[in-house]
Length: 73
Image: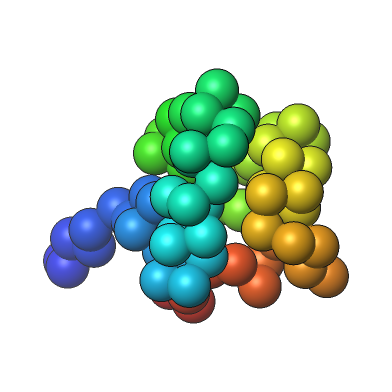
């Protein structure tokens, strides 16, 4: 039986969005910290809290779906 590596959302976040999030850390450090903490503990986009989804929406300039921000597994 193969053992698969658990990929947390921080690892699946697309590079362009990761860079934008890091840039926003200078302006909104507490919000980015909250988002980052949740991304480091979740493996599925559907497990993100509503507040973090809304923060990502604001910080990363209005995407259509949070699923767009992450690489496929």
